Structures are given as structure tokens and as C-alpha cells.
Amino acid sequence: MPPKDLARSLQRTLTHLEPPPRKGGKFGMPIPTHFRPNPKFVPVKDRIPFWHIAPNDSVVVVKGDDRVRGATGTVEKVDRETNRVWLKQSDFQFKKRIASQYPGEVLSPDFKDPNAFSLAARPFHISNVRLQARKGAELYTVSRMRRTAPTWDRNNNRFHWKRFGLVRQLATGEGETGWVEIPFPREEGPAKVTAGPLDATGEDTFALSWTPSTPSSSSLPPELDISRLDLSGGPHSRAARTKRFNEKKREAKEWSKLKASERRGGFSLMEGKKIELA
Image 1 (cartoon, one colour):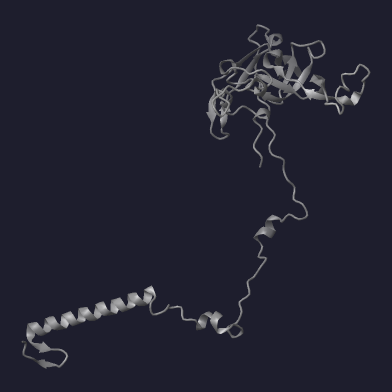
Image 2 (cartoon, rainbow, N blue to C red):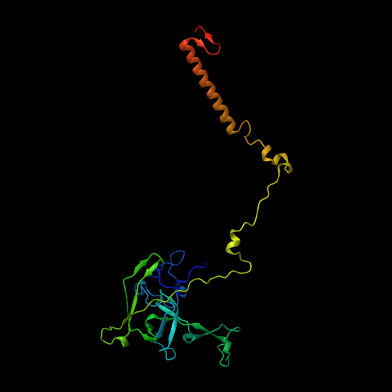
């Protein structure tokens, strides 16, 4: 399973607040300008710790050119290191010139090929968009945002907090302050994979599909017949040497007992009569 795209999911950690590397070369030289991130790098102190805008949120552009100002769009992804968001709709894209096949062809004043341009997503700074809150069937533009104290959710392994937006149209003054809770959009789970014609079902995985055959002793050669093999090992095996050692130890113990009894009573157990001890 590929790693999850953090730019297209809810905020879970504070990794975007980690300081960037100060040295970028083998000998500790500064990072060249053509390798620096685009859009412009944002210092850690200017980054937003806890975002109130998440992917799949509905926002309205409040700042920009006349073509996009006042337009409503859906957040496709966020970049928490540069404080920018990307919108899904094609109205917020811009034309990008494709590299020409012949040098200088696009720079010619007579060149008017419509296929030489493509649409690319344009990032918007978070201060140029406003979140929209839904109250019933109406959508209202939020002017201010608040949140509760963030807590760590152990079940989902991420930070959790609630966000509230101020809708001035709903501030009637009769107990209505205009602050409404804006729930975070629901994340889409992994796509459910349907079983194909070559996939095994649950019953097939537990079914007995192979039974090993047991050949008879008569059909086996002597060197493979287990019943006729001597599995005790050779005379120099560890088991054989241990057996001989224990037998010698037992014989020595019996002989010691016999000699002790002979010294005490002068009676030989081997001959069955009294003997004179030297």
C-alpha cells in the first residue's frame, strides 16, 4: 500500500514545523538558489501550526485578479510548509507554455498554436481564501476562525480539535453570536477491491486442496524405508557415548558398594562366604 499523501489528508502531526536543513552540499555549502523550493520558502516561525482549512473544504477567493476574485472552489490539497492551497476547479488554473519542438518557435510573433499551452494548478495563499460554513441549505463566508485546544487522538493517531467560524449574517443579537461549528470533511477510505475471476473466496482459502500421499514400505528401497533404518546413531554418536559412560558409572558405583560391604563384615557377596581381609 503506497504511503498516504499528507497534502490531501487531515493534519495529523506537526512535522511541517521542523526546521529545514541549513547545509545542502557535501562540504556544508549553502543550497543553491535554483534548488530552493517554489513557491518561496516560508520560515518556520511564520508557518501555521494548526490549520483550519483541510482538503475538500469549500472556500471563496477574496483576493486576486478579476477572473478568480469572488469565485468558490473546493480545496484539492494544502502545503503546510508554504501556507498555500490548491483548488480543484479548472477556473483557478493558468496556462503553462509547453516546451517547443524547435528552438525559438514559440517566440515567433506568427506562432499561434493552441496546443502549445496546458493548464496547471495555481496555488493560493491561505490569507487569500475564506472558509465557507453551511447552515441548513445556505453557504456563508466565514470572517474569523476559532478552535478548541488540540488533543491527541490515540484511536486515529492524530491531533484532534474543533473549529468554529464567525458568520456575521447569523449574528442577530438575540442569543445568536454568529459562531457556528464547522466539522472537518470526512476522509475517503481506501478503495474497496472487488474479487475477480482469479481471486479465491473465503471458503476456498480454508478448504482442503491437497492431501499428501503415503507410500507403502514395500515400494520403497531399503535406504528410504524408515521402519528398517537404524535411527539410534553410530557407536561414536553422542547418545552411544553417553550410554556407555552411564553404564561404566553404574558398574563403578556397584563395585564400590560391594567392596565397602566386604570391609565391614568380611563377607564376599560374590563367593557367598566369609573371607579374610588382608
